Image (cartoon, rainbow, N blue to C red; front, side, top):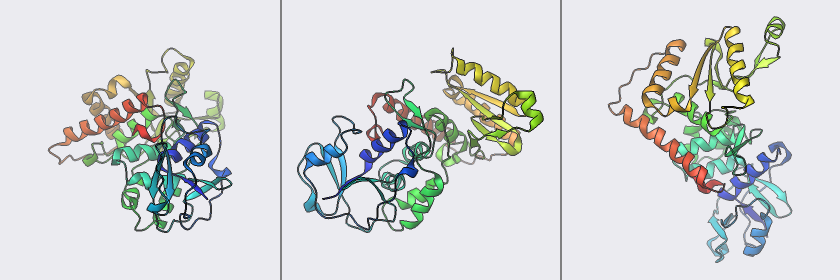
Length: 332
């Protein structure tokens, strides 16, 4: 009997694989058009993911019928009897499958709030995964998937639960965020006013500025990669995390990168955690960026300040729960 790992367990797997340096391209989509009937013993299900599961958390599996559900405290059954879109699962080994990142996103779109789901998309399409074993709470990695794949999958999943939210929000996310806090900054700056953001044009995250030969001689490197870049406006934003940058060699590298960007004619905006904790300071930073981008924002919402605070509170709550959780999707 087949074991189809899904939801929280699928996210544990992709985080585990990403933090170990594995690539999505190593897995081929399984040709499953429907969830196979039947369910193996709970002990076999737990054993199939024992090397990456979160201790004391139930394993989430997909079954075709309610009659396939077995009474077990360490397995959480999800019933789905419909047609699976192509690429919903990848094969781990004989008889064991895991939800693809795109199908995982679809299933979580039906479970999470919009802010929680967006933060998940940033992680799936970013250069980090949450990791309790790293002092920062996250590890750098190659992206698990990308927004193009997520969008294409959503198009193939018409009528499925969560697909409307998925299609709506995929355009609000960005790729290649390098940390959870960088994700928060991008969301605060670029989400629409009604969601509590500043509705600024989206920057490119961690995109290389490839230097010309004269620039290479001036700067002494091949390329520069700012945290956020509005290339057309020659504007960059650098985020300073006081949690781990201060006092180490990363602080020196960041300072040098800012100076190099300025030497190349880029304006550089620096954002600190202390500034992000202040709504007034964040307003000031957003206004400064808007002026440099030539953007005029007309606020017609009487409760706009309340919406900004609600967004910040949601992001802070997710971050706080993430610190206290072991790992995995149960943190949101």
